[in-house]
Structure formats: C-alpha cells, structure tokens
Length: 561
Image (cartoon, rainbow, N blue to C red; front, side, top):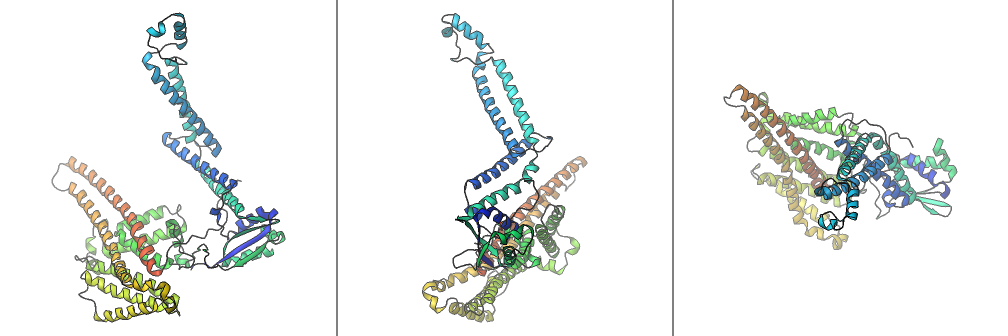
C-alpha cells in the first residue's frame, strides 16, 4: 500500500528553533523539502562534503601509485593541505623542466661567471650566441633542484596514500546530517517571536508526533509541550504532490530497495505494485538469464557477500537466483549444455520444442496475464464507478489479442469463434464506459484513439517474446563458446600441444561465460525492468512520477561530533 500522508505545519518559538529541529530529527517521521534550501550555511556544508569527496579521490588515486603505504588517520583538511603542497611542487617541477630544456643547448656553465665575462669583455655578447637572460643557477644545480622537488612530490604521494580513507568515509554521515540540519533551518521561517516549518508526515506517525506535542514522552521530547509547539494537520489538497511512502506486505518489502536502486517511485495517488513487480520480475530474471548454472553462480555470489549486503538485497538476489536455478531445471540448461539423464523430463521436452512454439506460448501467456492483471486490478479499484466496466472490457480485449498473437505466429490454427464474441462485448464496454457523458467534450478524444490503443495492446503482448529471444541468445552464445573451447582439444595432437590447448580451453570457457553473464545482467536491467515499468505500468496507470518519502532524520552509525 501507499501510506496516506498528512500535511504538517509546526509552529514553535523562534528562540527554540534549533531544539525543535533536533526533536523533529530524532522523531525521524517528517519529510521536509530540503532541496529547496540554499543559504550560506547550506553552501558551506555542501562544500565540506565536496572537500571530503575530493580527499577520498586523492587518497585512492595516490594509493594506485604507492603500494603498501602505512595508513594512519588524517583529517580532510590535512589531506587537502598535502595535496596543495603537492600541486605547488608540481608547478615548480614544470618550471624547472622548462628552464632546463631552454638552457641545455648551452651546456653546463656558471651563470655568475658568464655575467662577469660579458661585462668585462666588449663585444663578447655579440660574438657568443648566449640567451638574452641567463639562468639563476648552473644546469647541474637546476637538475639537482629538480631531483629534490620530484623527491618531495613522491613523499607527498606516499603521505596521501598513507591516509586512512575509511576514517574520512566514516565522517560522511556527520557531514550529511549537518547539511540536512542547515537546510531545515533555511526552511523554518520566522514571523516575529514564532517560527513555522512545513512538511509531510505519514498518518501512522501522527500519534507519535502528538505525544511529543502533549509532552507525554520523556527525556528530550518531554520539553516539546513546554516549548509551546503548535501543530496543524490536514489532508493533501488538489494540486499538491505529497511524497510516496510504499509499504508492501512483509514478504514483498525487499522491493523497496529495488525501487530505490532504480530511482523510481509511484505517484502518491497511484498504486503500490510491489507484489506483481516482484513476482513477475523474478520470472523475467530467470527466463532472461536462461541458465541454471548462471543462477547457481548468482546464488553463490549472493551467499558470499551476505555480510556486505543489506537484508533486503540479500533476500531479493536469493529469490532471483533460486528462480533462475528452477528455470534451469525445467529447461535442462547448464552452461549452455544439457544433462543427458534429464533429457526425457516432460518439461525439458516440451520447452525444448525445435519449432520454439511452446516457449513462445509461455511468453505470450505471461504477457497476457501480466497486462490483464493490471486491467482487472484497475476495475476492482474503480468499483462501483461505471468506468470499472471499461477496465474489465480492456481485460477482455487483451484476452482476445492473446489468441490473435498466437494465431499470427502459428501456435494456434485460428482464433476460437467464441473469442470474437468476447472481443465484441469487451469493445462495447470500453466504448460505452471509458468516458462519462458529461466528460465527452473534454475527454472525447480518448474514444477516437481507441483503434490505436487496441493495436498497441497487441504490440504489448508481442513484446513479451523478448523473454524467449534474449534467453535463447544467451544459451546460444554459451553453446558457441563451449564449441570453440572443445574444438581446441579434439583430434590427435602431441601431449604437450594438448596440454597447451587445455589451458586455452579453460581460458575460453571462463572468459566466454563471464562475458555472457555480464550480458545477461545487462539484459535484466533493460528488459525485465521495462516490462514492469512500461508495458504493465501503462495498463495499470502507474506513471512512476512520484518522489520517495525521505524523513528528516539522522544517519545510522556512530561518529564523534
């Protein structure tokens, strides 16, 4: 579900604004539009974060040059000071290199002695082709100075490589919290003796807020009532865009991290599609990868990284990997090859149909069920409004298009006659109930677009064939790499050559399957995401135009102020 929001206007004493913001931050339930703030204090806080990021980049670049440097804690200021000294030395090195290059043709001479000779001997400057300006020191001394400068640069590189980037990285939460606090202060507008801050709070958190206002809570919150807070809560008004807080059922809650990773959120007035998204995405993942051995590799990597992954990511990747292994069992596909004793399994024989009709039937069935689910869901949500009939009508049209699609590619001989009646009745429902009579002037164009929308629904179902096409491509690439590798060790060859060919075989197999794995991961990002966020979402009416609820709170983790 998408959690209902309340608009919050909180009034406090202007003299108590910092304490008020601190209490709100500890509550961690109010969304403030922090990005709208931009004063001097905010700019300074952003600058501190930029300095920390630059310090980390400098340390990691220096570590590429200097190996096994002894690490010790350094502050951001110390790192930037070392880099400033290094940049000064680099400029000096460039100057010395230019000077050495300019005076090398004249050899190594003493500039002071040359100056005295030029002063005492008339006409010597014209007779000897010396430069207009003599160097500050001899060529040998310039080279010695250059060597000292380069040595100091190496020392600075070693000092940077020895800085503890982990300590600076651990300071990030403090920097982010400080910037957020300064942004919140910018949003808290003063009106004489009082100050007002506005934001959004989830309905389930209103009770906690009111306990603070009444002073029912202890410790830091107990002072809120005494401080004279005033609170105004109201429902969102037309035209307002509250943040979206998605709370799926417990089993599907890991989808929140996938939405966050993709940077998408449904609009506040739209639906939470976490449940069908996770179910169908797992199926798409399995079919696009198309190989049980690859699924086992994904699962092994997930288990190996368990301590580094969040619980949600670990759960998602485990589900996706298990689904891929299950698909490998059903299709008997392992590293692009088949296990001989599984070849007679019913699912293997059915999915392995050489005409590919059966696997295409699976794709079209998945597509039709996916899109029909969206329309039926819309219809149930709109009941008892008459537009619900149009949504059920669209589900009927999609069912008809499912049979049309299978007929076009030769899976079915023809469209069953009964489906023509389904299509006619469904078309009438859509035409008669999509737009209410009072809205014909403003939304009548929707009916004019009906033929195009019907043809578009046919294209939407056909687009699910990508699950077969991409999965098959992955399997064929794996098969070709296997053939290339095994071709090296075939035939009669000397023992030493066979040993060499065996090494080449292993390299081809490892490199080929690694490349195929990478391409499979890319196809998931492109195709599995598209089928959920475009085809399904278009029929469900989810535009993904929302922005995620992000409460004003402290980052988790400990750091010293």
